Image 1 (cartoon, rainbow, N blue to C red):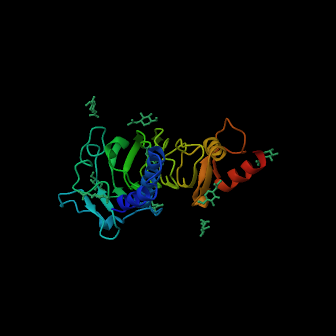
Image 2 (image 1 turned 90 degrees about the vertical axis):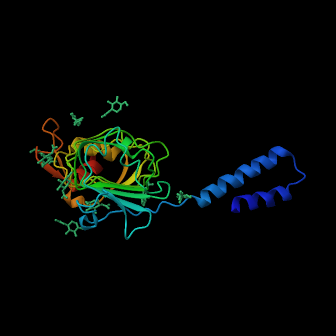
Length: 252
Ligand SMILES: *[C@@H]1O[C@H](CO)[C@@H](O)[C@H](O)[C@H]1NC(C)=O
Ligand SMILES: *[C@@H]1O[C@H](CO)[C@@H](O)[C@H](O)[C@H]1NC(C)=O
Ligand SMILES: *[C@@H]1O[C@H](CO)[C@@H](O)[C@H](O)[C@H]1NC(C)=O
Ligand SMILES: *[C@@H]1O[C@H](CO)[C@@H](O)[C@H](O)[C@H]1NC(C)=O
Ligand SMILES: *[C@@H]1O[C@H](CO)[C@@H](O)[C@H](O)[C@H]1NC(C)=O
Ligand SMILES: *[C@@H]1O[C@H](CO)[C@@H](O)[C@H](O)[C@H]1NC(C)=O
Ligand SMILES: *[C@@H]1O[C@H](CO)[C@@H](O)[C@H](O)[C@H]1NC(C)=O
Ligand SMILES: *[C@@H]1O[C@H](CO)[C@@H](O)[C@H](O)[C@H]1NC(C)=O
Ligand SMILES: *[C@@H]1O[C@H](CO)[C@@H](O)[C@H](O)[C@H]1NC(C)=O
């Protein structure tokens, strides 16, 4: 409605001007109003407690959140639900374009396929407290993701999953088995939780600090493994993030 009425006003004002100018104006108004009416992604991270999960005897694995608007919680998904050809998440009886927040608790699947999310376009996505080894696939160009939580899953490896996730602000990878931090767009500025990843290599952590603008949370629970082929630290054991940051400031 708004869009049309603005167009009418503009077209009356410029009645006597040539067509190309009017077309430009029309496009401008259209673009501006599209921005104005796109629901904004709030930068809060959606997360539900285990008690909120649908019970095992309930037929559906997913439900609308009782407390958060435009949010869906799914629990106890398996590899059939998050596989390359899965349709479970596509056929849920919710309006995908209005749902902005997703939380999947207790996913048990060696591989989580990003493709299984297909037409969902969440701002906030949490896939937590499950058993996932690898994350396969890439969030598509134009993704609105601003918060991503993969905490507590035993994850070993990410594809270039975050390659196009340029709006990402918050990334929680705590309590996994990562040796490296996932590949990201080099201009990214994020708040990262990489605490409690026992396999994290200091060389990879330092490489990441060089590439991206990172603010660490749970810094005092973040450690990395000093490789014995690399004599930066006089130990092959765990080094605290504080030590790594001190080393980084002196050397880079
Ligand atoms: C991510 O999920 C974990 C585990 O459920 C939770 O403890 C943590 O608060 C969440 N992080 C964010 C940023 O919401
Ligand atoms: C997680 O889901 C599996 C089924 O995939 C179930 O056997 C297990 O009890 C669930 N764990 C929790 C903590 O609910
Ligand atoms: C998915 O479907 C494609 C073709 O439809 C097939 O080649 C592939 O093996 C399937 N993958 C899985 C994991 O079922
Ligand atoms: C789905 O949600 C979008 C955005 O909120 C809305 O524009 C659209 O009308 C909804 N569709 C249905 C079928 O309710
Ligand atoms: C997970 O990734 C690791 C490292 O890339 C690879 O060695 C392993 O085979 C993968 N596991 C699965 C189940 O694909
Ligand atoms: C992840 O690390 C934990 C604790 O170090 C270990 O028990 C588990 O086997 C590891 N998982 C995988 C898939 O490597
Ligand atoms: C990164 O983001 C934080 C807050 O989100 C901001 O304070 C900081 O200035 C940003 N850094 C750069 C280089 O943009
Ligand atoms: C870690 O840091 C937080 C906040 O800076 C502090 O409250 C907490 O006591 C610290 N924990 C340890 C184990 O030092
Ligand atoms: C490592 O050990 C050498 C010799 O013992 C010492 O000179 C150097 O300062 C130590 N480096 C660090 C980072 O502790």
